[in-house]
Length: 253
Image (cartoon, rainbow, N blue to C red; front, side, top):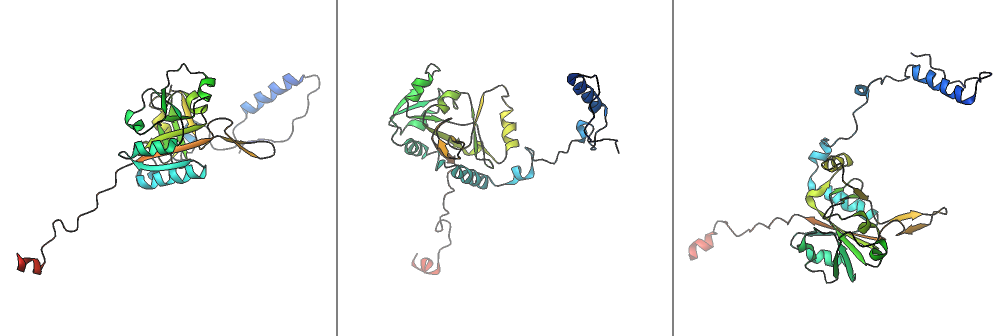
């Protein structure tokens, strides 16, 4: 047990406030800790990690289900689709947008059904220019199911941060393999490029004033649509294929 004393120290006559503060700091640094943690090895490591059993063993379809639930809790609109139907789902998510800005390396197949004017961002558009565009369409790097957070990297799919903040409507395409359960796994994925500029989005932009009135669209897009591309469904088994012929079929054959 240490001789730690939480009592308020008494002022020392003739000592300035600065000298007294520094003296107290020296005393505190020299005193032994009140807990048992003395080195980095003593820090508990019981928090969730990227290789946690829950992260590795939870079925992917359940993880995607949690992501959808969280996104809808944040008032985002989720469009669940497959790769073959993705162009139509993306066009539906963009709705009546007449102009759409996209990053430079967005897959061309995603915009096959889009009828709006596509503006490929080359970095020259100013915030005022972007404000005049109806919507932005981007991919993503990672989607975190437990927090409903979508992570964008400033690259050819996520685009620079300005295009995902200024237009009023943001449509994000999330592929099934980009969905993880928890934050540790997402941080591990982001560690592949630690110097990149990252943007984390949890629902449409919203804030509250001092009277707790919710205001949307102040710090980013007012509307958020997420197009989740899931694996194609398994084909239904053909009950007749491979079935043994009945006795009646054998008599008539």
